Image (tube, rainbow, N blue to C red; front, side):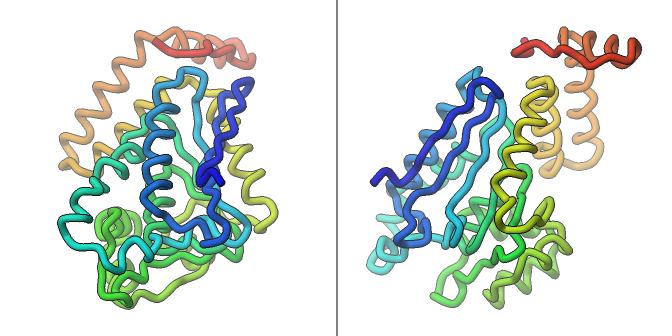
Length: 259
């Protein structure tokens, strides 16, 4: 069974990546991690793909790492797996990524969701970082991304206690973008993706870059990064078309790709 399924919809510029290890609640083994990295690298380079949707199954988005690959692992073995490069292929994606989360999103699964730019969660979705309960800590970015998303004190409680929390709590603390009925999660994520795919690709890319870069920069440097990106967009045909359409009170006809 292929642990990762890819469905491309070139007519609307979408790609749907689905974790496909239902027997273990889509737990991340090394093969799935490598498949995810390869898929994101390929889709990021594909001009036909403008937005990526990442989904799991009804019971689980992703229940975390496959512990069968951890129980006897040594530090040299873990280092040799080059997890930073595998996660980096996802975090480095320049295109908008939407996570459609149903069921469990725990440990590495919660970290995977946090690599997205928008998270659509089902009402019964469950999030958490339970690594401390097995003598570990997050290794896919939760100590950094979760803290940036929800603040120090909420993040500390989640990380140190290891207790799961529901979608309503995730929404209240700013960890997810919106919560919808479970049966509507993927439809809503795909609708959002189609909405984004109809917008200028380069503007979307620059906005994503500015937000992510700014999280790691002092305010004045973040503002400078934003300003330069803003100025560069004035060289695009989509800028001219977008403004003319607004002035002429008509729908814009953006080009297939910004250059």
